[in-house]
Image (cartoon, rainbow over all chains, first blue to last red; front, side, top):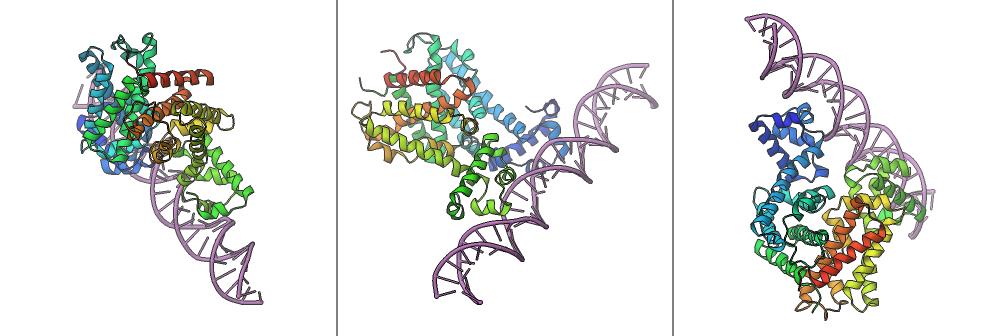
Length: 199
Length: 199
DNA sequence: AATTATAACTGACAGATTGTCATATGTCAA
DNA sequence: TTGACATATGACAATCTGTCAGTTATAATT
């Protein structure tokens, strides 16, 4: 993650570099992105780049983390606001993510990000995906959930988050409107709540 | 996809190149893999490689497709065998995929593959993910499903496949035994069937 | 103000990779 | 034997990465 030297930089310079990073990662997925393009655009010498980041991957994850922090924060806030109602909180989270990635300024960046979703990036975007359970579990109201104990919560979060990410990723290919996109996710969420089998 | 020239090659030569491809993609994810390594290992000249494939990505997808074909074929066969019982068929499919990727010979290759899951690869591994619905829908028994028409089937397949892929990917990090891994997936599948909310 | 310590900056360079292309070689039918 | 076509080959230009030794800026100390 971005070296201290970078974090110490004056805001203006730092933001200029972040701008150049985002431009390159909007144009190319991580595997095709070039340090050369970034330094040309940001007008910094090659040596500086390596003083700020270990390599291009390091810079990539620095940028991703800016967004992933927002997402995790938002979910926790919603859980508190909604008295631990996990389904409602994820419904709100979905809308929040959509509005974030559909912002004209972010559109191409997130498209590259989601269509080349590595484990590590998914990890950063799904609050429960790896470590997050500890953080979330204490805020969730499990009394209405179909599980024996808080321990089963992980399964439920797995299902919801998989479906959520999947919908986001597919939305890029399906070219759905934001409204239609939300409709599909909520339809699936409702199937998850009630079960896919007839009673 | 692999040029005709490659497909025309005598089997022995072709298999030797496939072996070298797999070796390189077992060692490095696509983004770090090198043509140089492959041609050194396969003992073919550089020019030949580019006569067989457009680039390294092309070679990568050629290899992935070998496995994805098996998976789609297996699911369809199971659906027929199980009279369109979709849940049972995916349970069987999950075991099939696990046995495939836990085979000692494939282990590292699939680890790289799943931990760097691009949209296109996911697309190849999940029968419904994109186009497959047409193929699958006619074999599914929807009478027991909680949907109004065959049209809703896409939602259900989305949920199941997301959860399935997610479990496979996580299994690499969690280091679960095959048995425990299956147990988790079946627990989640059962929540999906019955619903995550208490009745 | 001068000196010293510490942090940041810089760009030339070695090492390595990619995709191409002109040339060579093989195959097969007429 | 010849011509037409497919395939093979490796040297090469273009490009990229990460490093490093030398330079400059900043801050603290005397």
